[in-house]
Image 1 (cartoon, chains in turn yellow, blue):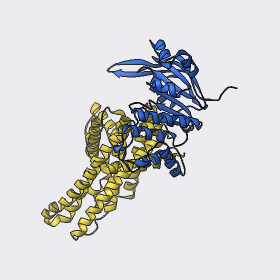
Image 2 (cartoon, helix red, strand yellow):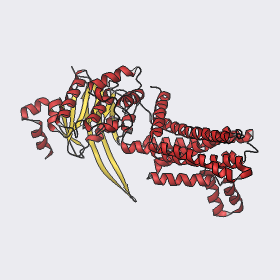
Image 3 (cartoon, one colour):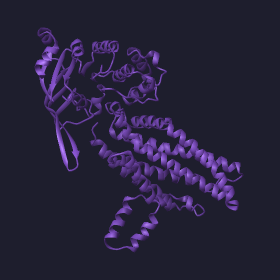
Image 4 (cartoon, one colour):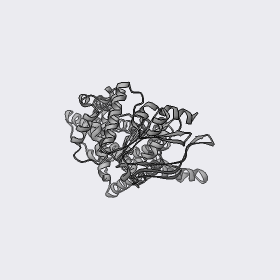
Length: 255
Length: 243
């Protein structure tokens, strides 16, 4: 069977699995409720209602999507090992790389589903309040998805090397947080010397720079063509690197 | 005339390593295991707990790798997709995605096995294992016996040449055991080679042409159905060999 068919079969099956999870239903209800609650914050902001309503909703969307994506990335493959459902998949003509790729694609699709769902609801709310379609809204969502895709690939890789789901999730949260402080880390590197500088410099390459995807912090200015190119290349580089490492470990894994 | 070989084990060594702090503990699971399986046979694996039965099954299914030696399925290494196309595998206590129905799960496995026009095949196999009345139920509602039948259904769905069954009757009630036994015999009659492991001597005695007795990862005896008929039963031979 050709590998593309396997990838698509695994991806479709996995996406269905994530969406059938009770946590997914809870997350969707909670995110809709939270975005709806942002109306209150917006009203309190008086003059800045539009801006606050948009930013608050986007922030919530990103946070909630991040929580579910990281959790699912941490458990999706390891759970198959634990429950031994992987036996019935890998005893068929399915290559480990195709299976892994299918799983990762399904996680990317899950991030897209969550963002599309929550984003549509937020747009409806803005329309209900009589506001226009926010500037570059689709682009903000796309960049948000790219960030989630990177952290999802990293988490899948971490799930192969860490000893528990909790460890995987904690490390992912740390990387996500540190990844938003890239300009500050750069500044610190310039100010330090010797061993500290070497340490900070190496961490700079090991931690993804999520700041390049934060259009919502500067959406009045927008992103240049170079910034767009950088964002896409950076995404591919991280996804490819983490996929290669994950595939290497997975290939050697026994069940 | 010599029969065709479907599976060949040549001098297999397999060790499991357990890491504890700085030390690594090794335990030998298979020692110099060599064995040939002919097409059309039903071969049984018999041994005490930890004898290496599941290790052999997993090696054949390409789920683990040997340290040395060679395994071939119809001349192909088990980790290759071409070899996996030829096998059907039922692990011990199979587990399925609880939110799916048996048709959905078999569709997923049919697609992974590369089957085209699988609807008819799924219908036939569901009928064969007796799950017709339970097609609308979620797997979470299935009993152990039904899970085992579904396990068999997924293993034979793509009409493999070699069926590998790890403890297929483990934990089943007598009626279910009887049904599973008849199923295996029926599958074998259609030309599929069956390789199964079991703790149940009487089961192997009823169904197998040959039985391999394993002890601590080594073959201690290979007996044919004629041998145990002369010796007064497989149990006698097994106890004499393993004690």
